[in-house]
Image (cartoon, rainbow, N blue to C red):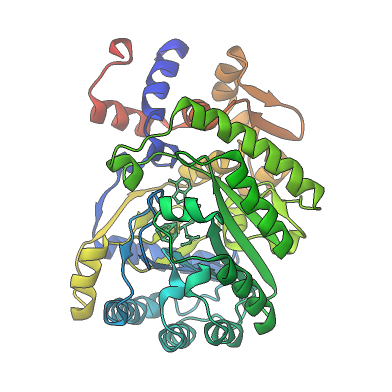
Length: 448
Ligand SMILES: C[S@@+](CC[C@H](N)C(=O)[O-])C[C@H]1O[C@@H](n2cnc3c(N)ncnc32)[C@H](O)[C@@H]1O
Ligand code: SF4
């Protein structure tokens, strides 16, 4: 393909949000358990010999009280403890099965997300953490973190978190304004609950509190959004994440035809700019992947290590993502399959993923970092090759269309928005993946 054809093809692929991931999810196939187990054996050797960093442990809990209408994730809504207990049993079985494979590893981070992991009762959480500590070596973790919502927190649960060493919690607030809470199907959340959850998290002694807000929802006014930002700033969280609403396949707003308008888009730009000013003025800065932190220690280390050092990740639970560098990237089973198979502990081929070679592992690192500026020295330290030599052709192509800023220390893609990033970053994709994408899509670039 020449450059023009590449741009056409990449723009076409970039329409699909998932195409941002490498290797693109569109190409993922089911993988036999045996292959995954081989991958872990090989990785354990690499880590034990000091060739690679200590891994992270991730647990996915895809349950929530209600499904928020803007949410892009696959979650099951409901508060029935029986339903959660069943999932917990499956998780415990999975831990039992996976632990012998990784028993030599000491995990550096432990992260629970979803969904809303704190939907589990205090006793269920305790049971889960207890089993995790028994099955895996978590004695050297530098950070243990968990995602929560105000409505699912209590002092009792927060004390359990503290007891098991959790030092960072995300209190997902999303919006504060009552009318908006109704519009997104989160009517059970109140301002008092938000305040209480911050106070109780501090009372329990959780060191770092992060909070999530969302901007750009259909019909969300600037005032409504900024009301939320002001409210949150008063709580003085250690980290603030502002997500910008994206219309995705699993979003209920999209399914019921409630789409964002041009007015919403314009308002979103304004609200983001105004919020940025307020938050920076309040003293937040630091991270590159997480722009609003009070101190660098408030960052999510599992994500940071993943982006900065391409670390290994073991994911447990339905839909959890795992990353075995130089081997495979894969997702665990869909929720329904996970619930079906784990109780009986059957060795079913329910992973979905893609093999990833050494060169592609390195490429994954490039794609994770080139948006904010990839540090060339760090790249050399990790992979023992010069960036400019390794990606000479890609740099030349991107230079010809003025899409790369490349100096002696850093290299950065020049893109205006997420769509452009998804498109131009594909100049780095390897020929195997490009060929497979072409075959899958069955359209010649000239026909797009
Ligand atoms: C996995 S959710 C979990 C957090 C927690 N359950 C909560 O509600 O805060 C993580 C973040 O994804 C963001 N998110 C969900 N759907 C989104 C969408 N359609 N566009 C952009 N961000 C989204 C939300 O803002 C949320 O804070
Ligand atoms: S935003 Fe959070 S609480 Fe709402 S459905 Fe998604 S994961 Fe669940």
